[in-house]
Amino acid sequence: MRFLVFLLLGVTAPLAAAQAPKPDMPKLEVSVNRVDQDGQHMYEVDATGMVNASLPKVWRILTNYERMTEFVPDMESCKVLSRNGNEVIIEQFGVARFLFMNRTIHLIVRATEQPMSAIDIALISGDMKHYESRWELIPVPETGGTKIVYHGKLLPNFYVPGLIGSKMIRSDIERMMSAVLARLDRRDDARVEAIPK
Image 1 (cartoon, one colour):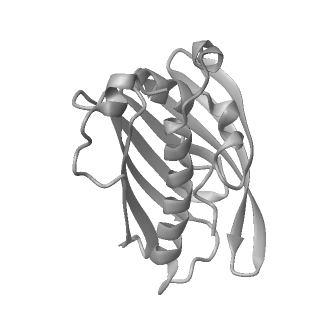
Image 2 (image 1 turned 45 degrees about the horizontal axis):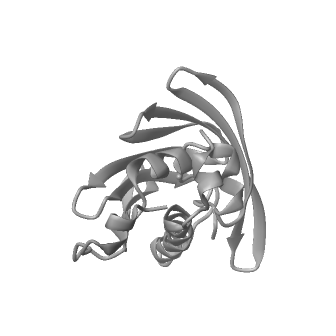
């Protein structure tokens, strides 16, 4: 199941940061819990990751929504429909893979940006009954890197098997987050890094 890869947004370390000791925190931690709400199964997702990339670089990548297809698995398109101050309306298409089936997923979401700090995502319409999430970006002075904290609540509008749904979603989140963290930590050449958002 790959329906979460396009829900999560949106997302070169200095030499000193690369040489600094890293915190003992694991690179990526993910938890998924199924909770019953109004007789339906809501999934609560928490993920925390560490990257060596500086906060400005992380912010620039995570808010460059139209380039997310370059590194987010199974996302086919991501288009900014409008921008009004710190609110961005985004349309996303992707593919959900569930056992032997593929399903196209279409979403329109609102991203509310708090520059260099957080991105709040809310579902406007699409193939979910409920979706909300928050990305928090926390600078790590000891390394010059960034801690990324994600919290989301989602309710698919298609069947997710109760017994294995949480494990499937966890696997999907780990795959997607690993790809995002790898992109954030990639050392780009100076010309790419110099391009403004």
